[in-house]
Image (cartoon, rainbow, N blue to C red; front, side, top):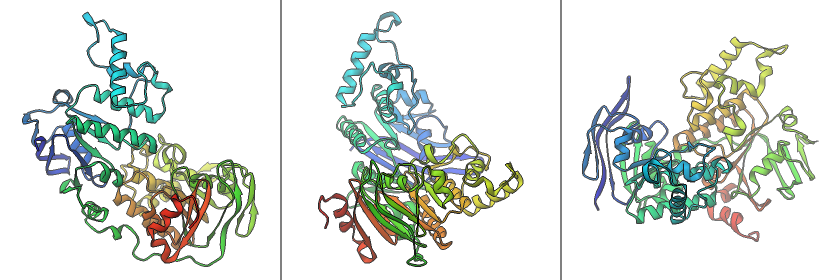
Length: 499
């Protein structure tokens, strides 16, 4: 098969940090090459060099048998290199067609735009790739997911030879992911080369022909996606086996005392949900998207109104009108959407962590800044939060480190019951392993934890017991050796009748 892209002996340093070390990447025409690795492995730096955003210190870039002497964003575009970024950058007040064509030559004679022709061209493009958008729709009226498809269409309009997808499914639902995968399959049939970057390994296995693995600035392996197992891939990514992701010495529940009980709890979204959480236990709630996992957490935390049923904390019935009531009762919720619901992105890391319990650093409504700095600095060091400074805005952190900030908030709040909704969603396998250690550390302090996840493997590796949800109801409860049986969990998740 013809080689479309070669990056030979690419080196890049930032001061004393050697970010890329003699990286050799070869991608064939019409294939989908997955590029994986932990945060900081060098994936983004390598792609920024390819797209001209960064200049290489040494090495060569050859596209379609032509060497690019000095790569800039302009020359990259001329050679057919394009990237779809995780965050779509669009002009809200313009239409879909105007955003897609922005920066291109006018579709008309003598520099005058032919709006009819432009809209017609974009409608044809959208129809060709089965993107559910209309050319004349204003972007400000679109969801985040549909804006992402505008960004993809903007790239496709330029007839690229190589398309880089960087975490493209981060804002997409399952239905929208199906649309994206159809687009990628269409591009492959047209002979377009794709580099696909994702932390979601199931996507890597589904889409890629080969997988390039980066670790610590090196390209450590190129693997054919034939008989490749998840264990093999993670071993290359981490430099250690899959089992090392989870704590070798898991703790156990402190006692059989029930610290939280749900008795036939119903809201507008869940129906007669019943289960209990023991002292010092890590309880999993697993199910498909829409099964009622998150809605159960919202009911416990007082965010969703309970229509019937009872909740008991330490044997005493409680009625939480608002989340603040649940927090006062010793319950902490780390929501699924950490950026929108768990953090103030533009504010410093220090402030985000302190917000969970201001009383710990304040007296008579006045914050003791010296005490706050000491507490947060120690906590960030203990949790290994990688940051320039605790005064840095939390939006500057990687996904894994943002999740560590959420966990730091939990340590600061010092609750008895913690609920983590998709605690490792969208973060790399290395950061996942660190999060699992932190959950076990909380358990060792006598905390009782609920982990909500769509990944059965995560539930099996972290939890003592699991509740499986389907269609807003509890479909089954699994513990002990049964928890290791993936097929049993899937039966509860998918089958209409209980097994």
